Length: 144
Image (tube, rainbow, N blue to C red; front, side, top):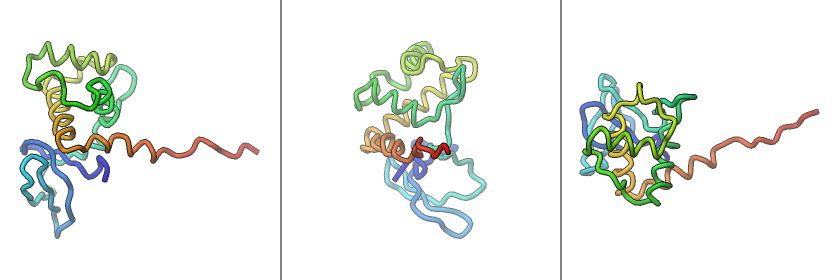
């Protein structure tokens, strides 16, 4: 499994794992309480693998940001509570990602990223951040 099977559904707390395709919808299971729900095309769904964080240079994929948090926290839960003040959240995120775009990344975005990291950490899913590095294509090329 990889982050392309982990979903954030607008209006629903936490993260969900894609289970199976159904007619005109799909089934997802909450990582918080293991309840399964039917998700239709009318709902706003984000796949974690497709999310990126604005930086001053180019957008950074969420998996890389989560990997930086994992490195900073040594694989443990975040040392900051996602419900802390805006200033504390921004200070923490600046330590993780010094070049993030402060004008386009809001405290609510930081809070969500930290919550998602903690959910993945609780469910021993931080390994998903490492496995996707193996998918990178080889840099060797024939130069005749």
